[in-house]
Length: 233
Image 1 (cartoon, one colour):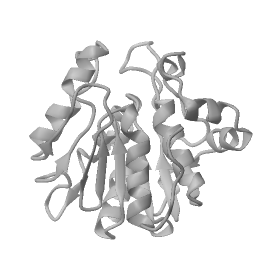
Image 2: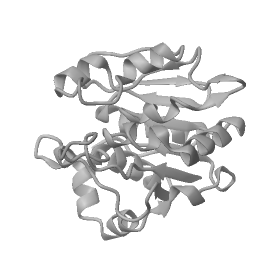
Image 3: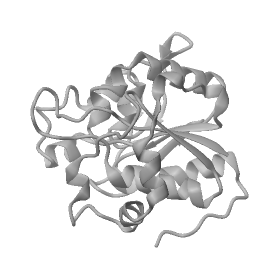
Image 4: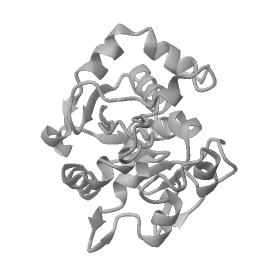
């Protein structure tokens, strides 16, 4: 398995001075699911180099087994320090693509033409595409067969209720739940912060940070159904 993970390079909530970026758990849990399953992993971002992480994802309440493992892993830290430029990534070189969330993708990846073209190439090749939490925003401008890639697809993503709970409803450029519905998707969700994924064909979407490992394990199952992965600690 050769998996591409794509992280945001955007480090502020809109034009404010409030820092954001990718959510650590949403990278760490899938990264180790893939690594422990024997996958080759490439990490890319629009600007390359070290992508910003949301400092809120590094607080005591947000840390997890996998974020602690990431913090203590010099190889993983080196991977983050040297992410590839997204512009140079080619879907032909990978079996699947995984987009962790955090609020950052709503500003850069959602509007990035290289990102859109890459997703379109994965979709046309019928390769798995996974997005978690706010990362389904990357799908908003992607079109397949003349219509939105999420049109008439079952999907999930960070809910309006969850956005309200973190007090960013009026800060984000759009509400992800509303945008997915506007595009014709069949949006589904569960109670805030519960793990929940939706699979429709080769498209995997996760609702929130708690869903990130489950989404990664589903991707592994798609690529290698016989692979045995370690249970969540």
